[in-house]
Length: 308
Image (cartoon, rainbow, N blue to C red; front, side, top):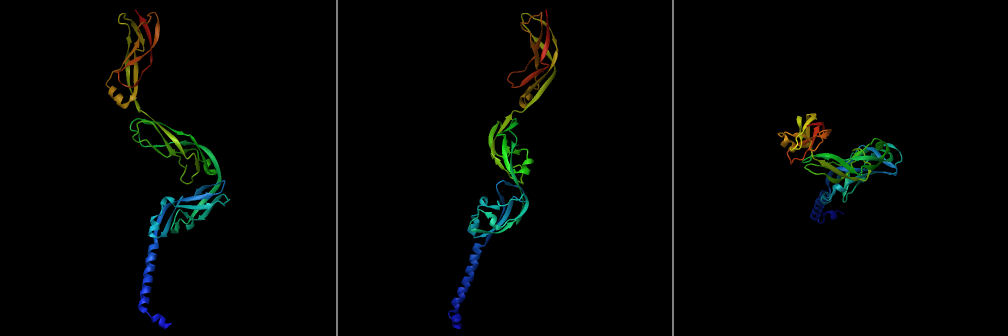
C-alpha cells in the first residue's frame, strides 16, 4: 500500500492539481447567476372560481446556470404559475411560491424567488356587461376632439362577483391624437378596471373612432343699423322695428381675426312688396365674401310697415 502512494508520486501530485483546477473551472462555468424582476404571477383557478385579490402581481427570481444558458434566457417567456384548481373554499389563503412555480426556463436552475409568500383571495366567478370608454392623449394640430366612439360600446367581463358589482365601466388604452387634423379610427385594447385584479374581457379590443372638429369662436357687434333694400326705380319709405340689431358670427379664430376691422351691414329685402301690407321679414347680414363663417342677427326678424 505504501509503495502505491510512493510510486510516480510526481505524476500523482500533478493529477491532483489538474483535477482541482478542472473542478474550479467547471464550477465557474456553471455557476453564473442572474436576477430577473417583474416576472408575471399567474393564478390558475378551478371552474367557477376567480381571483378576487392578490397581494402581488409579479415576483423576482434568481437563476443559476452556465454563461450561455443564462444569456439565452428569454424574459418574455418566463412566468410564475400557482395552481389553485383544487381549491374549493372562498376567502384569503397564503401560498408559498417555490422555485418550481417558475416556468419558461431551460438549462438553468431557479435558486430563489421573492416574495416567497403571496396572499390570494378567491371568489365565485360571475359575468357582467359594462360600457367601454375611450381615452386620448396629446392635442390635435387644429380643431378639438368632439367625441370618442367605441364599437362595440359594451364588453363582457368575467371575474370575481364582488369586484364585478363595483365595476360600472372600463377604459381602452389611450389613443394618441397629437398633431392630428382629421378624425380617425383605431383598434385599441380594453384595459382591466384595476391593477389588483384582471377579469377576462370579451372582446379584448374594440374599434375607437375619434371625431375631430374645427375649433370655433364668436365675434359680435351691437346696435348695427338695419337698412332697407328696395327697387331703385320705385323708392319706398319703410318703418323698421327694430331699427338696430346685434350681429354675431361663428368661425375659426384665424377667420375671426381677419374680420375684426369689418363693419357688418344688416338689411331687409323690400323689393316688390305691396305697400298696403305689413311684413315680418328676415334680417340679412352682409360681410365681405370669401370667409367661411356662420352669421346671425338678433333678433332675426324685423317688422316692416311700408309707406308711399
